[in-house]
Length: 152
Image 1 (tube, helix red, strand yellow):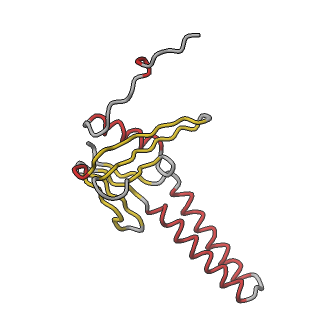
Image 2: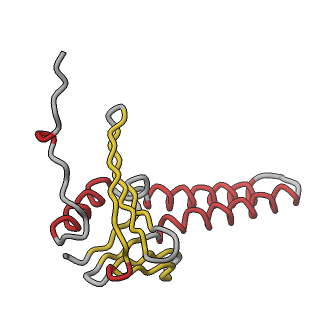
Image 3: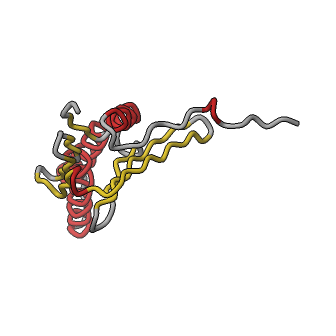
């Protein structure tokens, strides 16, 4: 398996949104005549935006030959070794032209780890699923030709 790091698909959008919120609060603090409680409210909201945005900016999944580790806020938040994984499932769907792919790693103990195209780029998650199939950690894909056709 090729080691890789998967990052949030919209990390740049989240980061720029946080910067815009902070810039708006600074603008209001410097150029608008506002009561102190409104300024403190803006500071609190900009801090909340920074915590929210920095989570997605720093979120990454590092996949190696040993396992998967989740990183957020520049620290490892969870590590799951392939040897400690009981089974791996794949959920793929295409609803109204919007495709999604979820890889769920079920450890022998503890809660499952979900690698999802809801946050990560779809192509990266599908490529990881193909690699997991190739090394035998994920069952082969079901072929469409083996399914019986409905005849009227």
